[in-house]
Structure formats: C-alpha cells, structure tokens
Amino acid sequence: MSYFSFFRQFLQRDFQIAVNQKHELGLPLVFFALILILFPLSVGPEPGTLSKIAPAVGWVAVILSFLLALPRMFSEDFENGWLEQVFLSGYPNVLSVFARIVSFWCLYGIPLVIVTWLLVPFFQFPLDLWWVLAKTLICGSLLLASLGSIASALLLSSRKGSSVLSLLVLPFLIPALIFAAACIDAASQSLPYNAPFMMLSGITIITLTLAPFATAQALKLNLS
Amino acid sequence: MFKFLHPYAKPEAAFDLSEKIYRYTMPIAILFFLVGSIWGLVYAPVDYQQGDSFRLIYFHVPSAVWSMGAYTTMGILGFCALVWQLRMLELAVVAIAPIGAVFTALALATGAIWGKPMWGAWWVWDARLTSELILLFLYLGVFALFYSFDDKRTGAKAACILAVVGIINVPIIHYSVEWWNTLHQGATITKFAAPSISGDMLWPLLINLTAFFIFFTALTSYRFSTELLKADSHRKWAQQILLKSAK
Image (tube, rainbow over all chains, first blue to last red; front, side):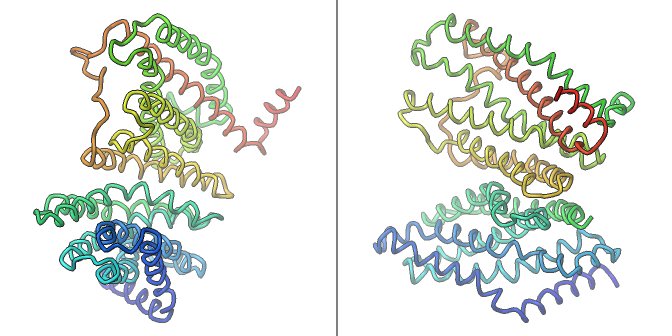
C-alpha cells in the first residue's frame, strides 16, 4: 500500500467513525452557540458594541469549543489499541499523525468556522468582514489542530488531562490571535490585509510541518 | 566531551557533582548578591528623573534576563535529553522549570512595582510585559505536565518535549507580540559600544546579574540532586545517602 493510499484510508476510517457518532461532532458546535448567547446578555444588546467585539468573541469561542473536543483526538484509539497497531504497521508515524490532524480539522475545525456565521445575525456583524474572519479562522483552526495534537498526545496517559490541556495550547496560540486580529482590523478599515494574513498562514504551515514530529514522539512515549 | 561527561550518567556521580556545585556556588551567589544589592541600593547615585525608584533595576533586570536564560537552558537540555536519551538531563529540565517560573514572577512583580510610579499603572499591555507573562505560563505548563503523570519518567520526558516545542515557539511569540505593541524602554546595557547608563549605576547591575546567574546555577543543582534522590529512592546508593543524612 502506497503512502498516499494509507493516508486516504486513514482519513476514510476517521470520517466513517465520525458519521457513526454524530452527537460527538455536534457538542462543540452547541457549546460555541451557547458562548455567543452569553455575550449580548453580559455586555448589553447595543448593535455598535456587539459588532465591534464580534471578531474577538468569534475567535475566543472557537478556541474554547475546540479545546472541548481536543482530548478526544487520540484517546479512543489509544484505549482500544488501534493506535498501537498503527505504530507497529511500519508506515511513518508522522504520516499517521498528519492524517489525524487533517481529519480532526475537517471534522471539528471547518464546522466551527461555518457556525461562526451566527455572528452575522446575532452580533450585526457585516458579512464581508465575516468572510475575512472565516478565512483567518480556517488557518487558525488548522493551527489549533496541529498544536492541539501535541498537547493531547502528551496528556494521553495522564490522569488530569483536560485541565492541563489549555495551559499547553493557549500560550502558543497568541501569535495567531495577534495576526488574525490585525487582519480583521485592517479589513474593517477597508485596507489590504495581505501582510498579516500571510504571517498567519506562514505560522500555520510551519506548525503543521513540525508538529507531527513532536506529536509522534509524544505518542510513542505514552505507548511505551 | 562525551568522554568527560560519561561518568556522570551514573546517578551517584551526578549526585556528588551537583551537591559539590551547590555547596561551592551558593556562598559565592550570596556574596555577589549582597555586594551588588548594597552597592546598588545605598551607594549608587540617584537617577535625575526617576529618583530612588530606579533602584529596582538591580532586581528587575537580572530576574528578567535569567528568566529567559533559564528557558533557553531548559529547551537545550530538553533537546539533548530527547536525542541522547539521558535520564539526568530529563531531571535537570524538571529541576529548572519552577526556578525559571519564580524568576519570571519576580520580574513581573518588580516590574509592576516599578511601573506604578513611573507609568502610572501596575500593568500595561506592552510587548515585553506580555511576552514575559506568556513565558510564565510556558513554565507553568512544563511543570504542570510533569506533575500530571503518575510515572515520573514519562512525565519528565513529556516535559522535555514541551520544553523543546516551547523553545521553537518563543521567538515567534516574542516577535509577534513586539509587532503588536511597544512601550517598554529599549535595552540599556546590551549595546556594548556605549551603554546608556552611567558606570556608577552599571557596576552594581552587572554584579547582580552575575549573582542571579550563580544563584540560578546553585538552585538548579540543589533541585537536581533532590529530584535525583526522589527518583532513585528505591535504589541502594540513594538509601545510603538518606540514612546518612537522617543520622
């Protein structure tokens, strides 16, 4: 089996399992919507304020909802022994980790980005700005998935998984947040936002390239 | 170099060495610290603009410098531990993390006390302050990770991986935050050609910088030796040492 068909079958399996457990996919989305509701209630319903904080709320809510899903990235396959079989299969571990990052991004990241459309009616957020926000979030959620893979792999066999998880992920996310905010800020003044967007995608690509090595190492540590 | 380091893979030898380093460096650190602090607090001239409150520089700058120095050390040690599978270095990473966190917290606290009279605020969202705060959370992450495992060896290795990931990320975080906002004054003593600080004020600062570095070395070897004892407490050499000290 070539590396490419291994990769494709890995993704296929992940998607099939996800289809069988649809409720798991929905939970982070519901959580996201709940966070959105809290803001107008606590800040007050003025449209001016709401549309101003909308991108910040969108980003923070996406990060939090993603953190909710992250512990599940490897835990099931670790418990039922599938992960061990993959590591024994002779295919590069980095490839399987990369496949898992991609499938996780497709299953949890992309739906969350689509759900941020709720900001448009709820927060009176302009649609053209939402498009910029969505673009930064597509990059950002891929970055989250690759950084999160390291953290969730490190904590696989530890007792207090999810409480430490945020401490391992959030500090590394700060550059992405800065550049995404710069993008939206520039776009809201109808200025070109290419420069910060390229920085953001650059960080994402670097992380996506390097993270699988750290994740594979961390998984090996937990499997031994 | 490996021929020189090889004997210290033996835990007894490493323990003896770190004990010795601690015993010899601790008095030197205290001496330097006393000289630098008294010189800085009492004899250094008063700043024409900031008055006496500038004297906080003698604690703020050394702790800030070595908070970053400690992180770099930790990252490099973590990398070596993972590549060459050296258990001693894993323990050293675990030993450094809390010390670095305390240096970072000290830098933040003295900075806040200094900022209140000078900038009129305890905290501003400036680039250096923010990246120092993030550094604190990176340290907390390393030892939170270590303590969340039942098996200490696994925990130490996980902490090493995180330290290496952190060391790659620190420059990215630093420059992106810099890009975001800057208010903090520029570096004063890194320009070796013409430091923008008078010599009378500079000497105590340099002495305290050295003092904090030696202090860091001493504390690291102390924590390293105790971590080593704890990890090897079921082994004969550690039990002998524990029995001897119990007497």
